Amino acid sequence: MGVAATEQPRVAFYTLGCKLNFSETSTLARSLVQEGYTKVDFESEAEVYVINTCSVTENADKRFKAIAKTAHETNPNAYIIAVGCYAQLKPEELAAVEGVDMVLGAKEKFGLSTYLKTLLQTPKLDGSGQVHACEIEQTDTFVSSYAIGERTRAFLKVQDGCDYTCTYCTIPLARGISRSAPLTQLLDQAKEIADQNIKEIVLTGVNIGDYGKGEFGNKKHDHTFLELINALDRVEGISRLRISSIEPNLLSDAIIDFVATSAHFVPHFHIPLQSGSDDLLKLMRRRYMSTLYKQRVKHIKTVMPNACIGVDVIVGFPGETEAHFIETYQFLVELDISYLHVFTYSERENTLAADMSGSVPVEVRKKRSKMLRTLSAKKKRLFYEEMLHAKYTVLFEGEIRDGYAEGFTENYLRVRTPWNPELANKLVDVYLDRIDEEGFARGYFLH
Image (cartoon, rainbow, N blue to C red; front, top):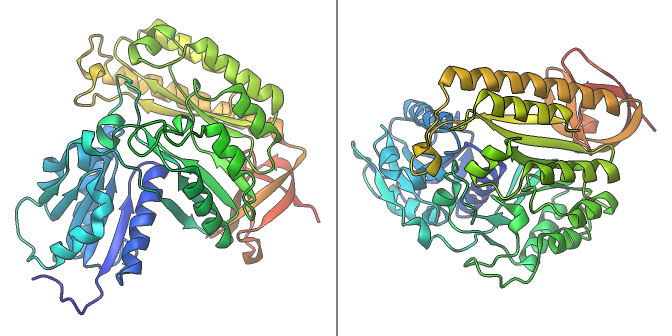
C-alpha cells in the first residue's frame, strides 16, 4: 500500500561520512519539512527512511546494510531510500539490500521530493528497489547546502566534486567534477545562518581550496578561495569561521596570513598529508611533495603559534615498505602538528591503486595504523599541555554529556565544565590550567 495523500508522512534521516554529507542531508530534510513532511529521529517509527551514504572506506559500505536493516526492522512497511556517494558508485548493490525501495545518485538526490511523491503512491514490493542514477559525467551542477546539526555550529557547503586523480580515491567517481557556488549565494546563506543565532560556520566541500569553478566546472565565478574567506569574514553576526580541510598545495601563504589576522577565522587547519614518503606521494598522484607540506606547517606555526593542525594519513598503501612507513612516522614525529586522522588503506573498485603491485598484508596495515594512532594521542596530549595557562574563548554546546557541558576553543581544544544550561551556545572566556583524566582541557571562567 502507498501512503494516502492526506497523511503527513514521517521521514527520518541517517548520515554516514563527512561534514559535506551532513550539510546535504540537512538541506534535503528542510526541503521535505517545508512541503509538509514530519521529520523524526531515525530511531523512531517513520514511513520513510533516507540514508545518506559514504564510500570513502570499506567499513562505510558495510554500515549501510546494518542501518538499512535497523530501519526495516523498526517499520517493515516503511520506504527506504539510499542517496550519496555509495548510491552513485554501487546503485544496483544498494537496491538489492532487503527493504531498500529506491536509490538516488549524485544528481538525482536533490530531486528527492519529486521521487518520493511518486514512491509514496507505489505499493511497497519485495525485491530490488528502483534505481535512478545517471552517469557521473552528467553531474555538473552545484546545489547549495548547509547543515545545522546543533545550535552552536553550521556546516556550509561551498564546493563539490574534485578534478584530482589520486589513485586511491573514489570521490571523483561519486561526486563528479569540481564546481562551486557563486560568492553572492554563499554570503546570503551565511547571513541566513547568522540570523538563526548560530555562532560558528564550518566551510565544507570535497576540495574547498579549489573554490571558484562555476556550475559546470568552468572558471566563471571569477572568485578564489582567498576572496571567498575575505568576504565571509565581513558577514555580520558570525562569531567564528572555520576551514574544514584544505589540500596543502592550495593552502597558500596568503590564505594562512589572512587567517592569522582575520576577525573571525580561527587558528585551526586540517591538511591532508596521506604519506611522508615522496615515493608514495608520487604513486598516490598527490600534487605536492613532503617539503611543501613541511613549509606549510612551519608557516602556520610562525604566524599562529597556537594553531591546531590536523593531518590525514593513509597506511598500507600498495608498495608501502617498512622503510616508507618509518619515513612517514619520523616525518610526523618531527612535524609540529596536533592530531592525526589515520586511514587504513582498503582497495576500492575502479581506482588505479586497486591494481597496483606490492599489496601490504592486512595485519601489517593494522599494526602501522595502531602505531600512528598512538602517535596521534601523544601529539594531541602534547598540544593540549603546550596550550595550558592561557585564556581562550570556548563555544559551549547545548547538549549535556555525563553531567558536563562541552565546547571547543578557537584552536580546537575540547573543554568541559559541570553542566549549566546557561552556557549553551555561549562564547565564554576561560583560563585553561589543567587536563582531566579523560583528556579534556579544564579551567575557570573569567568574568
